[in-house]
Length: 267
Image (cartoon, rainbow, N blue to C red; front, side, top):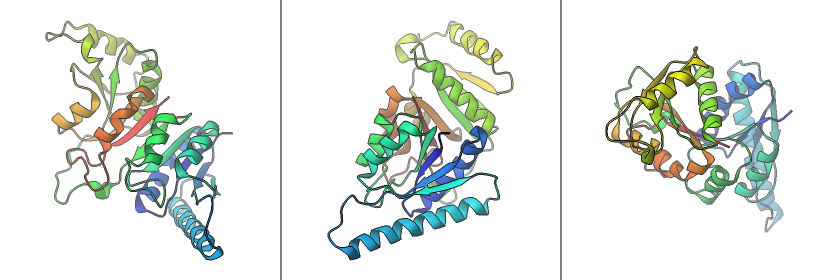
């Protein structure tokens, strides 16, 4: 039984990712595994003790937060050794999903755009969720009523899996979907209705999901930059993993239009 794995590093962002992952684990009837990676080698016993102690404390705090939610999920913990990126990429071979917080996935990560997070997004063997925290929203920012899930519809072979995953998340989180219109080269300046028909046909297979087509040449990152609609999750393909930086933004420089938008990379 493959678990849902969460990278834990002692940050509030990691705890937020663990809480976000609860529904993912419950919906699959699999364990939620919290992993805190420590360095592969240590210069002294004291350094090892500090590193191990930090990992154990981080895991206890994350597990306590999950248990405090009262949700019926089995929690496992693990402390693997090695560089965070390669360790979690290897763990992804036997995982349903890997979740990380948007401020980093290891004590030594400088930002979500650090090597470990980039490696996960580009090389993981399962879907990867990069989860934003509500504290990323600037003070006094108005909060729109609707909280969308956004995805693109294209002719790429992998797109059907991306759409299905987006629909799954929409059902799980009871959220409506914004479906953007295909690759830029597929679209003309004057919409001919073909894209809307494709969305309609797809929606017939998912009648319990609220779906709204948006005919646009923009990719997801550009759409988020240009629009104020509140988006909780952007679902992209592994081939689009390069959009991660543009959607999430580096640590300390959140994308203010969408400070709560998490990213799910499907492969």
